[in-house]
Image 1: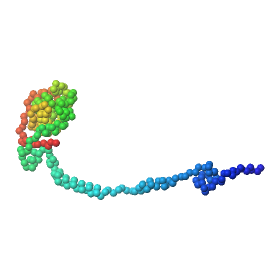
Image 2: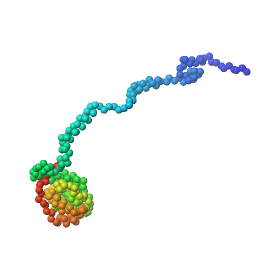
Image 3: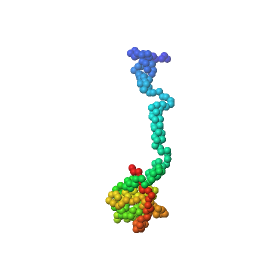
Length: 258
């Protein structure tokens, strides 16, 4: 049998492969294929490539001006320490000027007396969290100092409280407070005398000042006490006379205040 010839359509032209670039199969009719115009990717990203810097190994060098600045700062610091270091002596920054004055060959009698109110106001900053700046305390928690009976009472009782602390219930202005007060025996005699003087003369309190000599005598008298005071023990202590005050060889020196 002979093969039946395929009909031909004279109106359909033969595809020209040179004319249609990008055809997936040049044998197909131009109307049956997809013509793709792919953009030039390299040209599209050329601007971005120009903006990107080439990676380099290592680190950037430190600017010379910054090195010179630090060298100058170190030199100035060394000069300042050499001029104001006091030879790194432990007694140069002693807060007691009388000690330095005696070491310099002078007499302590020439030292200025201490301002107990100024020292007491500075030291009272340790007490404001409980007793508040205005001395009103916190109701039900911490007793007030303004108008308190023991504040205006015998000063050696206040010195005893500060030296050894307080524990248990106490009566203050008709109210009962049951808590603990830490001991402040690590403070100097001048600081304890100053804070007692400050609370006794502040707000509505008008009691006289307390000398560091009284605090020193009370510290000696109660040195054997191991625990804090109680309200009953303070009442008994208030009925006793204050300790004898020894004559001081030198007056209290002026303390540094902020």
